[in-house]
Length: 226
Image (tube, rainbow, N blue to C red; front, side, top):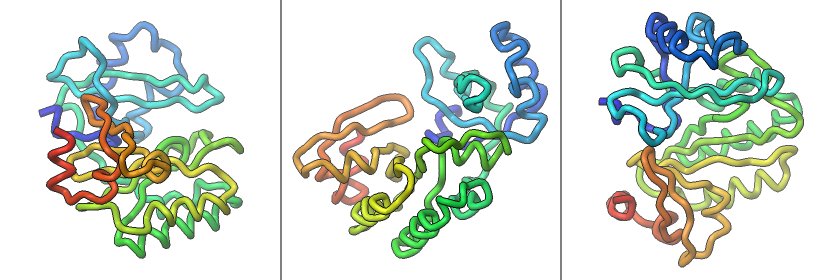
């Protein structure tokens, strides 16, 4: 089922299916990198399904580098044409980072280790790491995904805020809960327990109380997401 995949999942695509999907899109003729994307060994990422798209197909996307228009390309592919790629960890992205980011990356990775978590990059750092194309600029954020097994570890959000206060870039990203939903860590950290924050699911957006998200057990999280 297409629903087996979750937001931010990286997927590899069967080359023939990719070629067929591109051939059906006249608007993609001559767009840099797109035709050879899969042949060059690059993945796509699961995206939110648009209204009217076939529920039996897998909605995927890829962003072009800023120098090529920063366009976000969206396609739908047959389920048997894609397969999951293992998550890409922040520790693997060091080589793609500006030297000025080195201390921040080390601090973020160490924070994760203290809480038994392995942060993943997304956004510009992810795509530059995976493709070798130039996505990062001096204005780029460090976008991170933190997958928690049950609750958000105490001190994780404060730790991120402390690192950001000394960082040369903005730290952004999401806490990902066991059901696949995600909330922006900055919004959750800034919210009072009774405030509502936006939670993103694969197929919908919902508002939930910050106090429940920050401290409730997995059962409460799953119940709140329903």
